[in-house]
Image 1: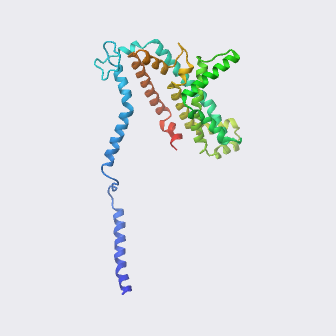
Image 2: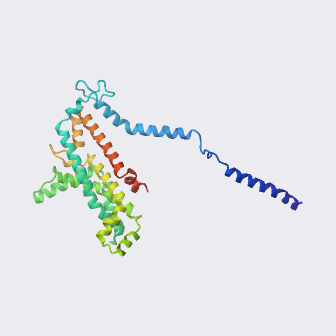
Image 3: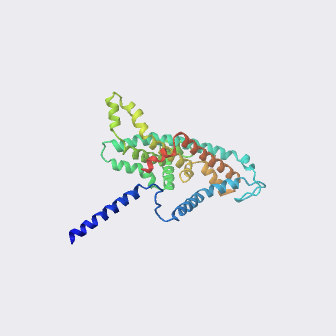
Length: 306
């Protein structure tokens, strides 16, 4: 009985297997997985995220176009669209904006000059205590920015009392404070690239007769370039938008753009603030589009996404 049942079930099993194979070969759209409303929820969630992120900038740009008489509060939507406030941006805001751009560019360069060798030393150095050194370089990210500003102010006063050279309220004093908080970003992004770097590429360059500088310039630097770009971009943004450190290290007549806006909003609201802020938004948008065209934002963010 058992032998007969086995002979009867074998053809049925073979037929079922052939039917499954034929169904797998059948052409047609792939079966949809998941709930049907998942796609709509994804679109709804994405739309809400974009609205949440972009609505403040839309309000600022729209309010800057409000024409008519002087007003003392943000008015959105604008009643009489006009560009009149763009022509009334005071000279102080323009000078502060130029100072912030110059300072941010300089900070990005200085952070790269310090951060790239530091990352190379942390990843490839043989010094004892590399973990401690790495922690020290990341320490500025853990310290509240306002504490950093006060610490630099007190340090500059101590140096001034000892040497007679007071650098608080000067460009170089402000520059040192910004480089201090921006360097960890370059160290972090470049370190992430170096930890996945294939050193056999450098060994091949050495075997072909290249010296250390040529190998670094032609092999190492192009590979770590995404981390350098990302770190420099982060350093620029941190420096340009800094308030807690700059508010302690600036002086009357020498202020950055965020501090100028802060004082303007604190003392007396001026609609020209919205106009200059809108210009900064457009500049950042153009800069991101240009960076995408030249380098690619996927390249800039690659070091932080892996």
